[in-house]
Amino acid sequence: MADSRPFVDALHNHLQESASIYGAEAGNLALKALSRGGVFVAGGIAPKILPKMQDGTFLRAFRNKEKFDQMLSGMPVQIVLNEEAPMLGAAAEAARVLRESGAA
Image 1 (cartoon, helix red, strand yellow):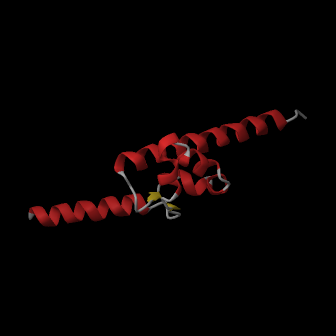
Image 2 (image 1 turned 45 degrees about the vertical axis):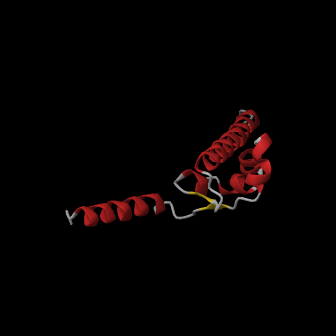
Image 3 (image 1 turned 135 degrees about the vertical axis):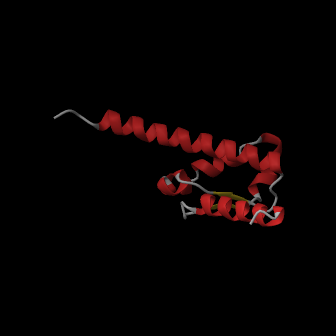
């Protein structure tokens, strides 16, 4: 039987790097939007890698912005566990637009 440890190590390293990149880009977007009220991370990936999202990797990368680390450190970050939330929000917005345009 082949040793699976190198494969497991590679997967762990990939997940670590992915969570870090995810956090860094979420921090970039929070700065672009000046989301002082907080950030909601929604969609299918975050709930599937929840332990990695909660181990500090994501938040360290989110906040690692030299001149803005203090602002980002005070910004709440919430992970939405309902994987359908983005679609529900899009459907609600589409219904609102249709109502306001008189099409519905």
